[in-house]
Length: 90
Image (cartoon, rainbow, N blue to C red):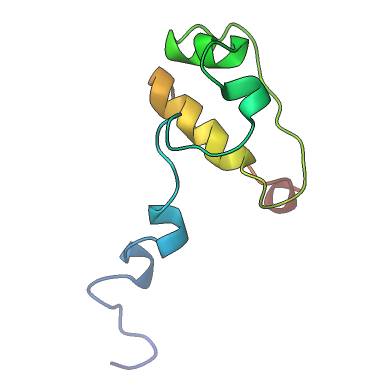
């Protein structure tokens, strides 16, 4: 293969990184934020019945699970989810 040959399978089509494969996919798998996500709490009940009537903003330092929690909520409520990084969005 030379510099101008297109590979048959692009490198970006590879499997996701192990960290992405290990992300929780359900509320029961998610660890942390017990004060708002324990059984019976308002946000958890709203998520379980798919009744989120307003926007939710997660704020905090990197690596605290904001995107993961948003993905769990989207999966649980069968909602469309797109990530947007402030760094990449400008």
